[in-house]
Length: 222
Image (cartoon, rainbow, N blue to C red; front, side, top):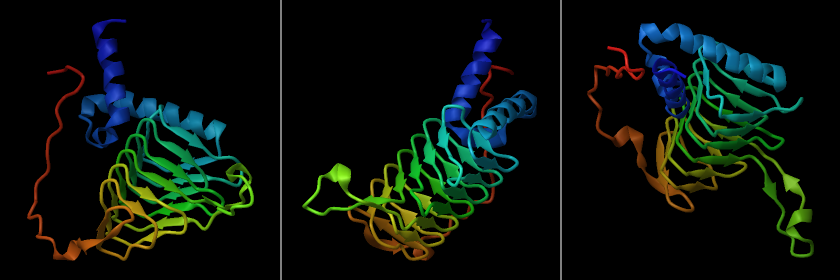
């Protein structure tokens, strides 16, 4: 493999682990990257009960499983990074991002995630639970599923966990490593284990940011 081909492979790997870069690719990279993604996504549609809208990025290293009756629906502009595990039923609204090593299992009732929500690396959302009755072994306990709902514009921090039956309101923030076992109000900032209220986003200072940033060229071209 020549150096240019090696750089292309490294670029694909970089996009898989940092998929936000896909949406700001330089024009000279669009053709090969979009063709690559069409191939990845078409193959996934053939193998699983998956619906993928336009403009998405799905890392080939992601593991998405969706048997009939456990559909995974991925809205427009979503990104799914390497080593994500997703088992339907799951529904992602527009522009949701799942960073590396996120785990979502929809159980029976499913997981719904609203528009623009960010799920950071290593976060886990499990929409099912096991019984705890003392008169039978853990492996024989019944499984229940209430479902998980995550609102719009939510940020779930790295390695956070969200348990079955929880609703996280719009614009909320779940801190790194938090374990969320009960509902989170809109705009709330929560953290800890179990998670508790730490603040309100509406009370934070305005960002004042008006500009953007220019990504570096990542394939070795001038």
